[in-house]
Image 1 (tube, rainbow, N blue to C red):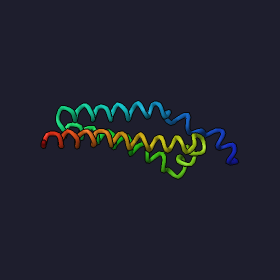
Image 2: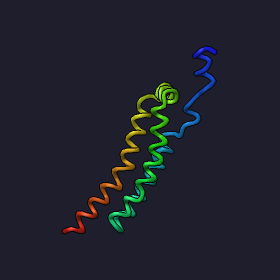
Image 3: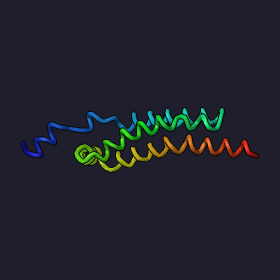
Image 4: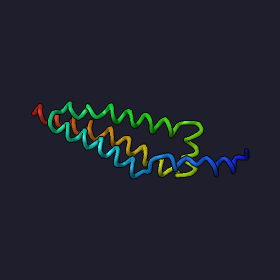
Length: 107
Protein backbone atom coordinates (compact mmCIF):
# COMPACT_ATOMS: atom_id res chain seq x y z
CA UNK A 1 0.00 0.00 0.00
CA UNK A 2 1.57 3.28 -1.07
CA UNK A 3 1.48 6.27 1.22
CA UNK A 4 -0.54 8.35 -1.27
CA UNK A 5 -3.18 5.63 -1.37
CA UNK A 6 -3.20 5.43 2.43
CA UNK A 7 -3.77 9.20 2.71
CA UNK A 8 -6.66 9.01 0.25
CA UNK A 9 -8.35 6.13 2.07
CA UNK A 10 -7.65 7.00 5.69
CA UNK A 11 -8.81 10.58 6.08
CA UNK A 12 -8.67 11.94 9.60
CA UNK A 13 -10.62 15.18 9.61
CA UNK A 14 -13.91 13.55 8.69
CA UNK A 15 -13.68 11.78 12.06
CA UNK A 16 -12.58 14.84 14.07
CA UNK A 17 -14.96 17.50 15.38
CA UNK A 18 -14.99 20.81 13.58
CA UNK A 19 -13.45 23.83 15.22
CA UNK A 20 -16.96 25.28 15.62
CA UNK A 21 -18.15 22.22 17.53
CA UNK A 22 -15.04 22.37 19.71
CA UNK A 23 -15.66 26.08 20.36
CA UNK A 24 -19.23 25.33 21.41
CA UNK A 25 -18.09 22.58 23.77
CA UNK A 26 -15.38 24.62 25.50
CA UNK A 27 -17.61 27.70 25.45
CA UNK A 28 -20.35 25.85 27.30
CA UNK A 29 -17.88 24.44 29.82
CA UNK A 30 -16.21 27.82 30.37
CA UNK A 31 -19.58 29.57 30.64
CA UNK A 32 -20.76 26.96 33.13
CA UNK A 33 -17.67 27.53 35.24
CA UNK A 34 -18.14 31.29 35.01
CA UNK A 35 -21.79 31.16 36.05
CA UNK A 36 -21.09 28.76 38.90
CA UNK A 37 -18.28 30.93 40.23
CA UNK A 38 -20.58 33.96 40.31
CA UNK A 39 -22.66 32.15 42.95
CA UNK A 40 -19.82 30.72 45.07
CA UNK A 41 -16.22 31.30 44.07
CA UNK A 42 -15.17 27.66 44.38
CA UNK A 43 -18.17 26.30 42.45
CA UNK A 44 -16.58 27.56 39.24
CA UNK A 45 -13.65 25.25 39.81
CA UNK A 46 -16.02 22.28 39.61
CA UNK A 47 -16.11 22.69 35.82
CA UNK A 48 -12.35 22.21 35.54
CA UNK A 49 -12.36 18.38 35.72
CA UNK A 50 -14.77 18.32 32.76
CA UNK A 51 -12.56 20.71 30.82
CA UNK A 52 -9.53 18.61 31.72
CA UNK A 53 -11.18 15.39 30.54
CA UNK A 54 -12.09 16.85 27.15
CA UNK A 55 -8.71 18.58 26.86
CA UNK A 56 -6.89 15.32 27.61
CA UNK A 57 -8.83 13.60 24.85
CA UNK A 58 -8.17 16.39 22.37
CA UNK A 59 -4.49 16.81 23.17
CA UNK A 60 -3.89 13.06 23.05
CA UNK A 61 -5.21 13.05 19.48
CA UNK A 62 -3.13 16.06 18.49
CA UNK A 63 0.08 14.55 19.85
CA UNK A 64 -0.51 11.02 18.62
CA UNK A 65 2.41 10.12 16.32
CA UNK A 66 0.07 9.00 13.54
CA UNK A 67 -3.10 11.05 13.98
CA UNK A 68 -1.44 14.36 14.89
CA UNK A 69 0.56 14.83 11.68
CA UNK A 70 -2.49 13.79 9.65
CA UNK A 71 -4.58 16.46 11.40
CA UNK A 72 -1.94 19.10 10.65
CA UNK A 73 -1.67 17.92 7.04
CA UNK A 74 -5.43 17.95 6.44
CA UNK A 75 -6.58 20.90 8.57
CA UNK A 76 -3.45 23.01 8.94
CA UNK A 77 -1.74 24.70 11.84
CA UNK A 78 -4.57 27.20 12.29
CA UNK A 79 -6.86 24.36 13.35
CA UNK A 80 -4.32 23.11 15.91
CA UNK A 81 -3.68 26.63 17.21
CA UNK A 82 -7.40 27.27 17.50
CA UNK A 83 -7.87 24.00 19.36
CA UNK A 84 -5.15 24.95 21.86
CA UNK A 85 -6.65 28.43 22.30
CA UNK A 86 -10.06 26.96 23.06
CA UNK A 87 -8.58 24.59 25.64
CA UNK A 88 -6.77 27.46 27.34
CA UNK A 89 -9.96 29.54 27.36
CA UNK A 90 -11.86 26.60 28.84
CA UNK A 91 -9.48 26.64 31.79
CA UNK A 92 -8.87 30.38 32.03
CA UNK A 93 -12.43 31.70 32.26
CA UNK A 94 -13.57 29.66 35.28
CA UNK A 95 -10.26 30.18 37.09
CA UNK A 96 -10.21 33.93 36.44
CA UNK A 97 -13.84 34.28 37.44
CA UNK A 98 -13.29 32.33 40.66
CA UNK A 99 -10.25 34.44 41.54
CA UNK A 100 -12.11 37.68 40.89
CA UNK A 101 -15.08 36.55 42.97
CA UNK A 102 -12.81 35.49 45.82
CA UNK A 103 -10.90 38.78 45.78
CA UNK A 104 -14.17 40.74 45.81
CA UNK A 105 -15.31 38.79 48.87
CA UNK A 106 -12.16 39.78 50.77
CA UNK A 107 -12.82 43.49 50.35
